[in-house]
Length: 187
Image (spheres, rainbow, N blue to C red):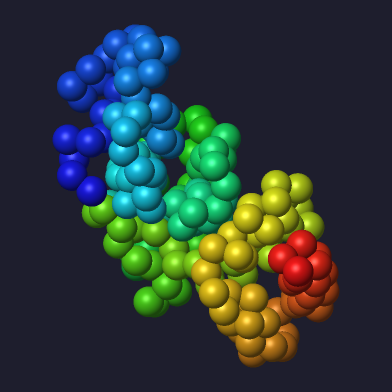
């Protein structure tokens, strides 16, 4: 995606100017930025819109990664980023961004438009294990699973490998329930 197609508030135009352009129908909101009304919202556009809130040594994870990969129409109200650097750091982030200090798995992060994003399978697993404590995680998981073919089977296989992880059985039950619900919907 060409950077000229993404307007971040304060870069070339102020937030007030971008808001006026949105009201006039010239641009639409994408994450933390705006794009011209006649462009297609892609994963690259979604990731690029988050460049200001995802530090270089971190990656978008959880609901934010699910949204970047194509789950849902609107971004999450609270973004999540996770450390991908071996060295710990404390970034200064806006209040609507949650920083997770746990290290992402090696090979679990993909660079999209210059922004680190956790891949679909690790994101699905993270949402499965977060669902008991976070009521929005299941909604994001339901939106993410149809995005990538074979994601349900991949998650099932990875869960079987995690035989000693707490919460694995409930995550497996949730995955099977969601897969069955989506199977009924697609018939």
